[in-house]
Amino acid sequence: MPTAFQKELVTLAHRLADLCALVAIALEEATRSVLESDPTLGGRAREEAAAVAALGAACEDQAGALLALHAPREEEVKAVLAAVHIAGEVTRMGGLAREVADARGVVPEPVRPVVARLGAQAAGAARALRELLGGGDGGGVGDAVALAGEVERELREWAGGPEWPFGVRAAVDVVLLGAVHARFAAMAARVARRAAGFVPVGA
Image 1: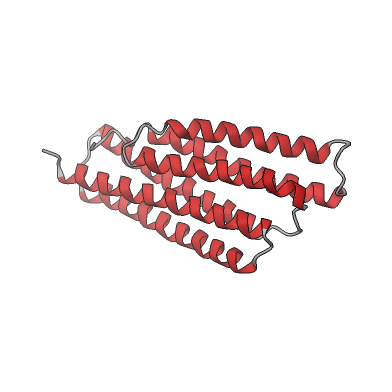
Image 2: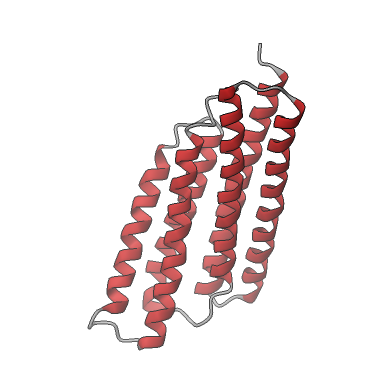
């Protein structure tokens, strides 16, 4: 029978899964707000990023309480520390979603489908994390991260190449936008590695 500690750890895993779902929504709305130049969507994305920060802090507090109120074994301590790191990383992903929402400049119309694909793959990595923390195999994380990297390179090479027709300022803006999405996906990959030391405990 699961111990009280293990039950609370499973509850924490579910909250972390919710955190990943929330950060995916924040990035999706932030990306749409930039592509559509929609301040309302941008405001919603900022609200979602703030909610990510609040839930991430709550997850860290819950992890601290687990250590304070129980006498966990060594492997359980490692699992709780992994949860703290996961909450912190996903919170930082929320900060990156806010950066996207705050991006200045208009994305040229022909470039928007590429940025939309990049946003979809990066958000997909966060959704795959949700599945992993919910007890799934998380196999989609690596695929989404790899695809996000490919799209970001495509965008960077296009913006820096001789066929780019939209000027230097637009090139800089879209390269920076792509870099933020790529960092979001890279953080998702780090979280997936952390989760390998967290998910099995209390399952």
